[in-house]
Amino acid sequence: MTLVVFIVSLLGAMAVGVPVAFSLMFCGVVLMWFMGMFNTQIIAQNMIAGADTFTLLAIPFFILAGELMNAGGLSKRIIDFAIACVGHIRGGLGIVAIMAAVIMASISGSAAADTAALAAILIPMMAKAGYNVPRSAGLIAAGGVIAPVIPPSMAFIVFGVAANVSITQLFMAGIVPGLMMGIALIVTWLIVVRKDKVEALPRAPMKERLRVTGRALWALGMPVIILGGIKAGVVTPTEAAVVAAAYALFVGMFIYRELSPKQLPHVILQAAKTTAVIMFLVCAALVSAWLITAANIPAEITGFIEPLIDRPTLLMFVIMLVVLVVGTALDLTPTILILTPVLMPIIKQAGIDPVYFGVLFIMNTCIGLLTPPVGVVLNVVSGVGRVPLGKVTIGVWPFLVAQVFVLFILVLFPDLVLVPARWLH
Image (cartoon, rainbow, N blue to C red; front, side):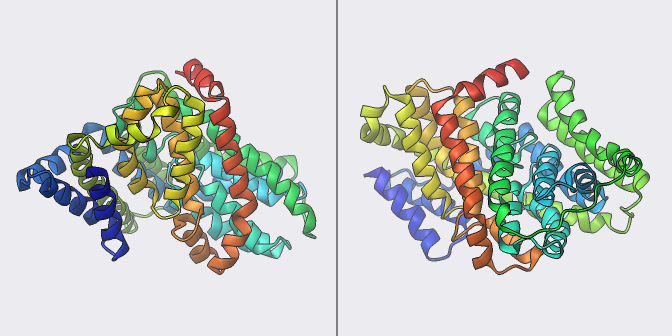
């Protein structure tokens, strides 16, 4: 019965338009009332304890790094570098979009920020070159959701805190799946772009390539510093976030000189707004998470899927399908915070590696950013690229299918995640 109360109160609150964070708090209050243990101190204590976590400090600093990267010209130089390398290939601007998305993902970890930067620069270029605009917008949206999978990833940080899983291990485990997502998008793009009569960009002479590469070196060095520092044990993920923000600030102001002191208050304010939304969600979700455990809801769910406990691959298939459906209605962070405390006890009971599950779970929630009706990244591309949302939704389908294909390949072959992760770690 507690499971029914949890689902009805949560979905009911969201259905009438209550923001997700307040819906989570309302759900917690209803559960407390149902179990006869209503106490406002439980809400306050869990919210404060949720925010008082050193690991979560990585979130505001990675968000700030992403904002500084876009304002300071790092994103633009990464795209210029990709154009110089592969822009002359037929369909090359699509490859540029994915190549730049992967590089930028290894810097900021924000799907919305990376997608906005790519859409603003590349959609006008692709339209001018004769590419199908809705399909191009769909590709850029699909490339943008790689950001939370390739480290550094704010989604991995939130999941790691909620599930008590090593964030460093999650970071290392996300590299190969993220690259696989990028490769799948490039292959799909090269198949579908054959229908378009497009003009390839002229091949950049070697002198120009060297010049563009030289200008982009400072930007390209950022992921090396972040991931190299974590891998070498010099910095923790939280400390790496601080280094990333400081590095982006230094390069934007003193190397590229595109970030002026006058812009800093706006950049910091934007990062603070995004941080406030995410942190409030985390705090509210931890109230629900505590009550989910107290109400023993995972045990109720385990009772329904008990026949699958001894068949981990089939269990993963079922869970991934459920998460795909949930992702159509919820944004990335709420999905992580609502489902993690419910699913983790089941995952542990089935003997599934929590790091492996975490990577696939985050991949799945990222795919949810591409699915209507919520489709946050679709809305970003539509707004920034000035392409109607309906057309973007149609254009993204081939790439959405490619991402789901990669997800289920990894369900069937977990060693593709675990073996490289152990080697990298």
